[in-house]
Image (cartoon, rainbow, N blue to C red):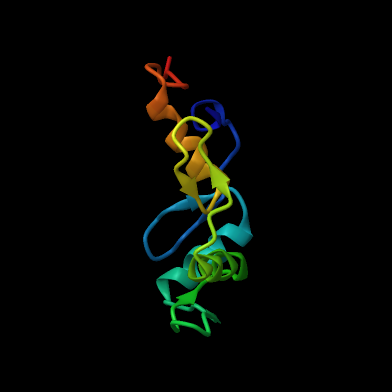
Length: 99
């Protein structure tokens, strides 16, 4: 919903692709992605990531642990947001409607 009502200014522009950002930190991360700079490397499979939190989430995937389970069908998920997205299939309605 925030995307439809956000009136902040995007004052930071990527000089390579023209994409705009609200803050300098996000722009810096975006530029690193252009440069393929991914300093955080998984010791299990050597996949690299831009941010340490992305690496942590990836490493959890190797464990196979899925702590979030659906109360209606028992299907399990690694992340809470995955379970939340799944729960929609058990209802006939969509949770958000654009105005």
